[in-house]
Length: 288
Image (tube, rainbow, N blue to C red):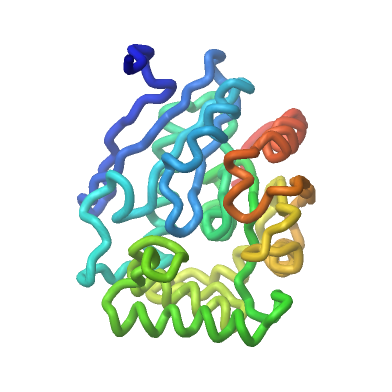
């Protein structure tokens, strides 16, 4: 028989300034004022995929807020050949969701929790909007700069071909290639640019994100995953090197079966590292 138990989360609507409808899932802690974690998914990974991980964080006493990327999951309109948005729009979306989270939980410290590209977007958000969160937790994340990988020429070829296919096709058909979902050509263009040059310069952005990253003063927890080939420790090092003013704690989630995505289903090492880091008292006030 189907379970009649209520879900462990609620879904709330959120409209972006340009009228795009988002749906936000909230796993709420039993204790008001508990630290709130804003989950930022990886490219092509729906929020539903993270549910075991987010449940564990809720059970540990934290509130978790999560939403899919623009055009994904239950956010409409969906990505199509008419979509042109890139990192600049995703960053505006993330800032808007972070502001909504602060308004809903005004007494709670808020931390961005980004997986893979979600970790990069979390740091870029802090670079431009320091008050967006009290810090960030990166899991299986890192720069995609091709020289940070064991096989640099292969990485360069794959990333640039993906952007070219997206431009010709109108979208990146990720399901066909086993990487990502149906992604906007603009997202793939910005992703390939950073892979090629090492620099974050989203098209149509007026803010210098490289300079902003150098000024990020926040506490950062950077968790690498032992057998991660998509975001190896060298890629994480390249990303962290952009943050000379940040207070960075490095951890590794070790386990025989842990890789870039499987850590979600075997998340105890990541949960444990997150809990330990969050127990360190946050600064008395947010950065100005």
